[in-house]
Figure 1 (tube, rainbow, N blue to C red):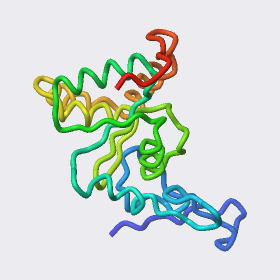
Figure 2: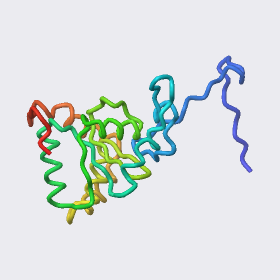
Figure 3: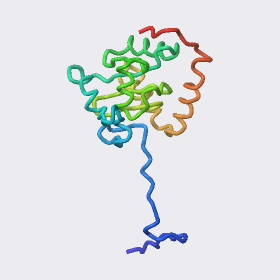
Figure 4: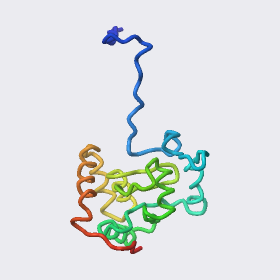
Length: 179
């Protein structure tokens, strides 16, 4: 049995060492969202956004794709998904329902920087949301998503963020949500 050497103390006693919280992946189980992210104060009362938005999945368990309603690239993506799939519902990030679902996913209600896919028990953002959406679309997209998952997450998210940061400049924006 190998002995593991003790970690160096660097002059700090064990009472002074603080552990950092674990890194939160972009894929989150909704029940695992920290309380400070899944609730917010409204009139001094904490709101559990998972419970507050459970009605979205009572009658219809299909996932909901949250998208930037004034982004031409996003609207084109929604039209493409809608034409090639019937399993996903859609909601603009700017709508009241979209804001509440963002809170449910542990994001700020005014954050329109990423597409979000909200399933009944889990949310996906950025490139993970795109890959998960591709799994719902007709052939050959599920197969493409399978191979793209092997690209490291940080690389996929860098590509995603570069496109998202320049989407208005390249594709333009509309005055209102078209869907």
